[in-house]
Length: 579
Image 1 (tube, helix red, strand yellow):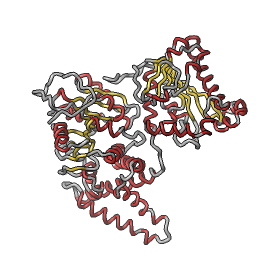
Image 2 (tube, rainbow, N blue to C red):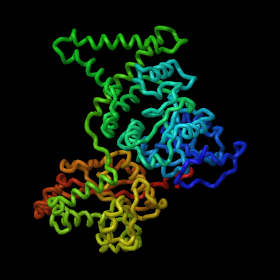
Image 3 (tube, rainbow, N blue to C red):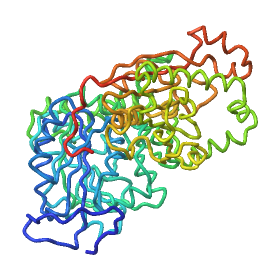
Image 4 (cartoon, one colour):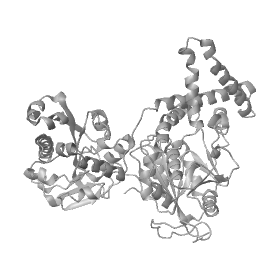
């Protein structure tokens, strides 16, 4: 095998405890999202750390989604006794944010995604590296195989997942195959493939891997299924948890399919068609005729349950259990799919953001509306800046000139000038924006182009962090949580966060999503939040600026909030290994 190319720096060589270094093997990072996995975590980490891969050629990076069941305490203990384990907070909670936030922290040329409720064969990593060499693929992975020690219900779930009647025939649900595939279970990725094909979609609470595989394959990625890459998962243990799982899969599948043209398959549509067909007796004047789909499904369900039911269980009990599992998976997925048909726009990529700004710049009406010389817009900005200044004055008094300030999503906004009367020092203001070209017009001397979800500053670097209408431009709730957590992280514990954003929907701008007060406050759970209503009916006051003073007195017409987020009551507990 030859060394896989990597642009990420590898760590210094550690002492090899595996019985002999193999310098030609690539360094591997195992990236594992977790959420309340205390019951399975020890077995999972033990199986990963007992790989027959050289001990100095892999690490485990865990991204924990705010677990409350003792998972974090277990991770602390593992990180203290095992230097190959590092863990970090995932404020976005969901898998896609865990993977996106974890990837910049990995050090390997290969990234192996793991789950906290699975165990892995001792040769899992070695088999994956061999599959890369054999196939030349961008992503490799193995089949989805259930663990052996399962309850009767879990055995029925495992049997359903291994049945075409349950999962529709995706190749990775069946053992013994090695072939090019649409997707694989979990996946082991070349790091450069993750860079080339982009991040996971953070609007997708589930199905994020299906969307990524479809997008990557459309752009030329090769995905390889190899039966030698072995792991074992633990299925859901109750009908309720199974129903919630499959409702979630169905709920986010339409959005995943819309993201990638040509990714629809018949198996994606069958469960929702089944739900509609079974509901026909409620909506037709010929109920006897409408019962035909129910009879047909019952017959197919019975036949599949007889064939799939686990052996070694009482026949009728096993048959009923298997039928209940099949029906729950089908109906929950189908109902979820129908619920997910409402169109949900993804967050724009930087390239799409540039196109949006370009369209705004080329539209004379929008240029006039947002012009610095437009009287209504001037009144809106003046009111906002005065409210920011008042919040700073109330909190810090005459100390404003001593404060370090971070302006997120700054664009060309001159925060130092807005706060000049309070003594804000331009040299202590840092402007940050995702798009470097927007920052080029910013008058601040310190300008940094960066993603607000992973800010390049140490914890507690600033006394004040400000964001204006950035959070409402992020549609994914998980991404909002990540940005808010980063704002809190880089702000001193006794500092001040100022967040100005839209509390009401804007029907004229489909690229933004409102930020209600309850959600706004929930983004900063460890800090007190005080709200002030601002900005009356922006489209109207831009047309009729003389109305601004009158409308600003009518608080129900004020559609924006300025949230002043105060000092944390206690220093946040840092994750082991977190920076």
